[in-house]
Image (cartoon, rainbow, N blue to C red; front, side):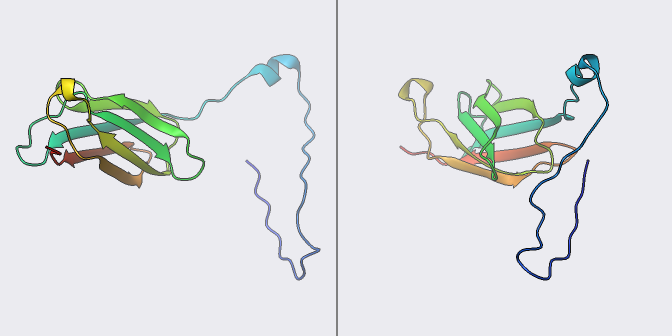
Length: 130
């Protein structure tokens, strides 16, 4: 990691470029260092009955950059789980079930929060749209 701090007294005194020279070979350059993954779990329930809502579509993205954190549909228990490399990010998302074949139709629900090193977990209550 590199951190640059400058005290600028005028607009012309700003950092515009950083170059890092290293000694390495093709083997070292091929190494990849993946980010740590954290668990994400979303539970979806009916707001009136608190019953699990299966087949609800969930899409969560980072607030900055709009990178996908989690996307899919809930299982029979109303849960969608996964992992993400976006720890310590503000996130927002939507939950919806708008297919007649799946049963009760619901108004879209929302998800917001911040992932942490422990992950992210939320329960979303959907309101019937019938």
